[in-house]
Length: 113
Length: 117
Image (cartoon, rainbow over all chains, first blue to last red; front, side):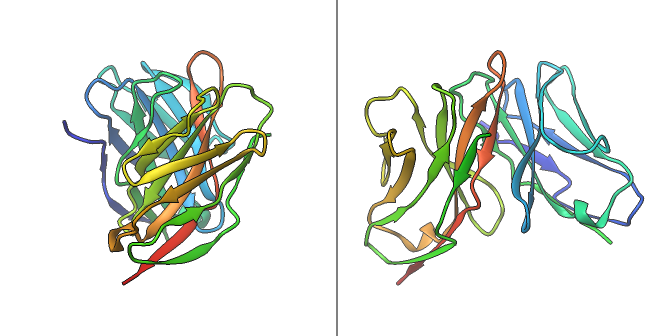
């Protein structure tokens, strides 16, 4: 069974640009969550999608948005990039139940110059 | 607010010895889940072990076991017979329940473990 895949793996953007990251969950998983990891703030929850609906959201500005498609693939968008958005963005998928573990992808490393 | 605390930024252990990574948590929920993840330098988070708040027995998964002390709100990870490949960052996380079955993970700051040959 294929794991969670994220594309691209590395990305370099400049301030003010926007970026879209993609996540393909494990087959059969309907929940996709996104996390931001930085040296200063650690791992922080961005949002979770389940069956194309945002079910939960972390404390991030509106520049961070996401969506989920009918095949459970998810995209995350960051508009008007800031230097502080440089981070490893991790996507995780699960079956969606409260006891279900989340399987993480390899992450997308975003660098904002 | 729920919080996870890992007080050991870095630890060393000799190969083949056991090591305990500390994790304490704070929550007012009665139902919660605790997870441990390993993050090698490649960046991918690897699930190690899960403990539910109502589980009576401590969780075990191969060389990993979780020392769950509910009254003390601690969920320490024990790695037995350490291997060089165990060198990585280790994160303790708690599931925060939120409506229906939705949840998000609250992570601790992590412990960097280095296994010496």
